[in-house]
Image (cartoon, rainbow, N blue to C red; front, side, top):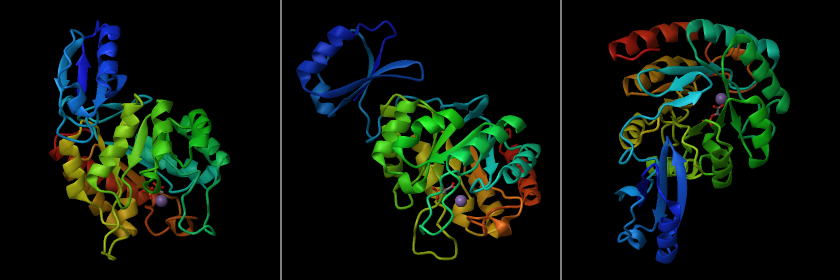
Length: 330
Ligand code: PEP
Ligand code: MN
């Protein structure tokens, strides 16, 4: 049950009733509203208290993420960049931070073409332990420096709860990768950090599991969450992963959170990236995350799917044309 409280709520009488009900509960402040989330629902059905404005019995397993109580789309702010609402935000940058010149070249090109955020992995979750694992803290330092130089907030993947302080120092937005889409301890810590989070859908996760992962973040009082569809594992081998446009739309219909699409990882090949990106925009994505490298063939990770800066510029022109038809600003 989600109890929306009056702004002048008197917590003590309500707390007493909740304690007597033996329900689990948590008081939260989200999107300027005072809330209590309680479970299981049946324990609190009969509670009446003058602090309660509305009691919402959610039909879904993720009451906080659900748009049953919050009808207006959430706008997630990453520094001065707003994700959600009328605008379509594009984040671009290399798969992995390799060196300063590489990131600077891409960042300048991305900014010129209209990207609003700079992405780049400093810690890379690689399938093989023998593959390039990322530069670590040095990579974050480079990303921060270049982001400040070019004027783009930065988003980067965090892999472990022990890295929260390091990311607070260098990043503007935490990315939780597909392989950590259900790392519940990491979700809790990212929630507690209060930093904006880009939450990738786990590569074997259903839409409900993905939304429940986001619920972990909101339950820590962090409402700055963008959901990211990045392709799921299916039997299909023609693409690296299957970009689940239908799932993305299904998620959007159930949540107030903005939705991002990453066309690069499901594509696996450059040739597919433009069309997948445009498909996601047509399907209502609020944000795109696109891999761009100054010399993709020489990239230390995901070399087949990264776009050249020229190709990214062309894609941005296409995105703008489509967004214009759909009444969105880029
Ligand atoms: C990435 O964006 O660099 C990445 C590793 O993505 P994913 O977690 O979706 O594989
Ligand atoms: Mn990658």
